[in-house]
Length: 240
Ligand SMILES: [Zn+2]
Ligand SMILES: [Zn+2]
Image (cartoon, rainbow, N blue to C red):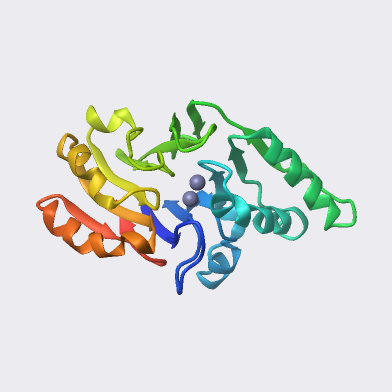
């Protein structure tokens, strides 16, 4: 499984950092966790067929995690007609708005796009990638995702509780995780210290981090050794 962070920024773009978007490759199949930016430019540049995208999973419907889906779904609707990704969101209201937006900008035309609203639990399993949604306390409806593929387990925390990650997913305390992708936009990264001390994790990637906490990142990497902690900017790639 290869994970490429296309968008690593916090709620707003920073120089060379776009909003949340992670691309997951398993064999010749591609998936996305969050789409705060439209990744079709990147797919074209990397010569990855849009048709290879099988699933889009949105942790929560804040704009910095979902706004890119508007442009992505629009292009899938009218141009990349052989593409048929499942697009899973946690709020039906937003799906309804997308289903209004797309025909509004396409002369009334919308094809049978596979939007669906998910709830907690296993939300996707195509035999290649399994995605489990775990409730968090970031907003009224928000989730972390456990991804399982090729015998590996990867956790995306999504956005967590404001002030402190008290809602860090319980599974991390009882299951070995090959990698954890976590945020530091809503609290200092140092808040993870007692959590990671109790977890068995292969590697941690901090992304979706806010500039006001930048000064803590380098010290955190040192403090957490021997746990491998990396800070991801746009384009960071991980083979897991
Ligand atoms: Zn966010
Ligand atoms: Zn958020």
